[in-house]
Image (cartoon, rainbow, N blue to C red):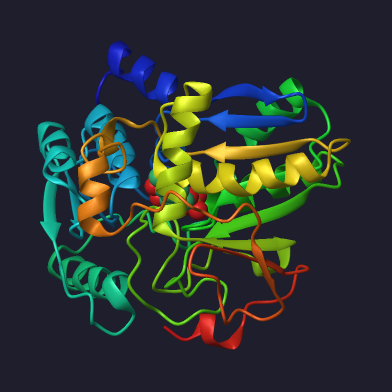
Length: 344
Ligand SMILES: Cc1ncc(COP(=O)(O)O)c(C=O)c1O
């Protein structure tokens, strides 16, 4: 077993735990620099301690971004060779960082595969798993260690905020929103959970389609999304998320990624409508990865994501269809997974 490398441990610790920031009297943000380091650390350390992951055992995972980076840091720290099956959302700068940490990166780009791009990534992961018997696959979409890793964050939030009436979080694997809300409810709070998704994502019953807003949403059904936990769902377009992310920086000085912008759009709306209630938003990563995209007006205009006149209110729908192009809300009321979300 490798000796602990103190600097690495400190970096992982520092990046894993968020800051709780008060944005307005009744609106808080849980601000991570790299949220997915937390489930990566928890899953790898749990597997090491229960013998599933021996010294030097290779690790194989599929991710389009931040989970890959979290795993790369944790695997480097413990000396596990890591292979990531990603897609073009892994931009060259992220790829360089992964490779500097010793990660082998394989990119698949078959967006029309069954199950969309995530289906294609999972199919390639299975091929590689068969080629490498004994490899450990963390499985962020289904591993209960993903939601389970957020318990210390829920304790931090409860200590800083007190009662949380509503938690608003972007939903990808479902780990953060599901893990945080179930821990807060376990502490005895009656917390409403609002999931933020995007058009083209199947998680809450839409058809699979292009999703220019990445990090949240999915083209497969992640087992870690427990639909019965969600009270409301918002679908936010890339343009709305990008515009709100920029506004977070210009208005509040918060330099964060676009899934944070999407969560803020919904959280801010609830906080304004419910001044007596405390709303907490999850901000999963910082803005550095998006400087040439979300924070670049030319890129936004060229890609058709420049939309200065965004709606001030979400469109309310009663079924997951007929969405507004930018912002839609549905009262989910803790209903089970829609049939079509279960078929990959
Ligand atoms: C930037 C970003 N935001 C949001 C999410 C969604 O979080 P979760 O997977 O916990 O649902 C992810 C997941 O990878 C992410 O990378």
